Image (spheres, rainbow, N blue to C red):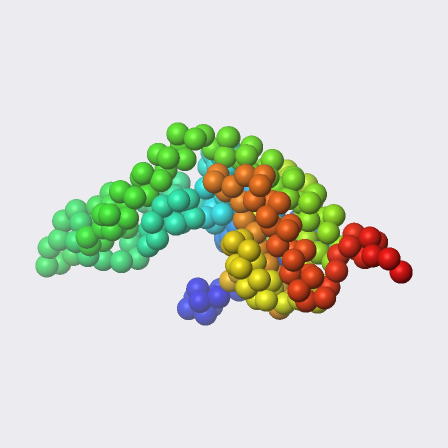
Length: 290
């Protein structure tokens, strides 16, 4: 939105289906207008949806558009191959992959990076400076002005090494296992609505849900007393909340340090919260005598 304001560019949004997928028919209609750039998230942090990036990239390139992938929510959780995806740019965040905050990375195809001017000037990003002009350093140095975040870079390198030692295929398999069990467990609780696709092929280990009659902020507060950490709110994605006519959701996220016992703790916390607010699950209703 800020770029559109600064440059006069037109910004359009791809529609989302009821089950949390990007509407590719709507995308095709918008691509027919000849956009310059398609920016997409690999995994929705609000819904957990894994978007079909390779297919979207093919459609975008056929329409003459470049593709920028926000991979902050995918790189820590699954193998990501920029060549196989065919994308032009990729951005990631350090703190989402067991690394420090305050650092991330931008990958881009070399020829595109070489054609781009630096966004910030300062020390270490120049090749030569004279009174009449400046020659920039080669990429990536021309985009790294001034003293770098040295401690953060070391921390991010350690985090990457840690995940690589585990193996991203193993990370993905573990999270898929947890997702399948968690989705099934929460689906069995009456009064719980899960958002996003049900297929583990299209859903990362992020469960966004609402409990009938209980605000997500209250859910998170009660969960905290049970030792269950979740995120409650709009997840920096207010337009998605508006799409589903929700003020917020509760989001449970699984990672390499979680196990099947955590799913049981989550379901126990849901039922305890329902009892506290007098909102019983369907199963509990069926067990009650008339």
